[in-house]
Image 1: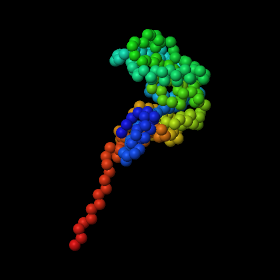
Image 2: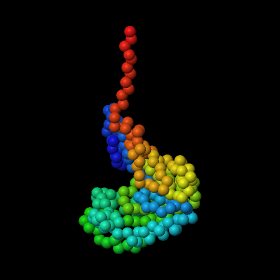
Image 3: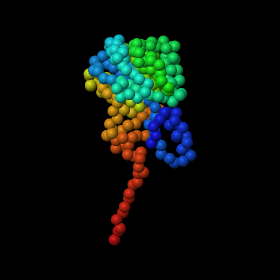
Image 4: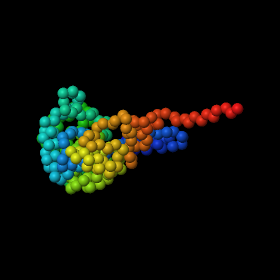
Length: 244
């Protein structure tokens, strides 16, 4: 069992290709969330957010209001809202390249003013939080994994467009729909191409249910009864009673 990027998972499969070695991989994701017009309140960490046009502006304003009061420091502090990860040297370059690509292609930096976002970084490799709006699927931030505090928000006209865009990815780890209409939420998650789908949550791997990735997000299964097969060798016993 291994967790990591899709590229790392492919390399591991190639490394064991000459042997008969079982490989169980939990790989990368570009997990989307869709906020319908009648969503309730919640906060979660996803990589793409799609918001119905009827509530898009209200949603962005609520995000901005939340971020205005956010307290970020560049070392661990249990009293801060967020203590930024000290990335390896290459990660900030990748994140900032995705941000630059989005802004060049028309995304809007909608991050509110917050002194803790712009204060001098201490030694380390940090990226300040950023809220992007007017994002499209020709931008890297909507197509690739982003291991950083980037929130891209896209406006959609209806449920059908939301589902189409959520499935327009090479990843399929998790996806979520946020709505007060639970029945409609259940209909929508049936259409999503991901191993784990949620209504009104996005952060809970239930140990009783299978955890698996679709597309390039993994191979095999962990958790749930089926997950046991990844960690044991199966054996079938055939015993015939002695005759006579």
